[in-house]
Length: 213
Image: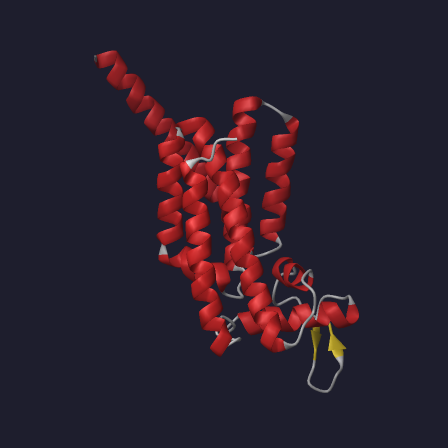
């Protein structure tokens, strides 16, 4: 089996980020837990202790709560429960690993359609983009939402190309899980309409240029 250049690039970025992440959390295990992350953590703890989505108050009383969507807390609760000093690095490290696995499959998708060079460019650009560096190890729902939404669009493109039902089902599953992660997906149809109109304009301009030539 021949090793592809994009695979080497993914592995190099994974190792470098892993070393940096390990060095940072060694001195400050909760470095990547702040802001909204504490709310997701509290709901994951409730899932561990009660197997029910909600919150456990300071007095130990459980109450149902829907302020945050359940997608990301369910993801966090899928990890083994450890003490806090080890729990936060486990969550961050798990996300770091899963992100690079996802990046590998996206690079394969790009290579089949646009060539190996495009896959390398995409992997490099995404790995160096600050939001993708920051949120990959941060305890926050944004990474999960971005991965699911991005994957849903790629499955949708693949379904349009192949006409296979399983690709359309995968699109629906990704979008459904993304909708349970962050409420932003309520605007999906607006995004999709604008994207479709943009594509139609591009196709029109291309046809006009070909006609004029």
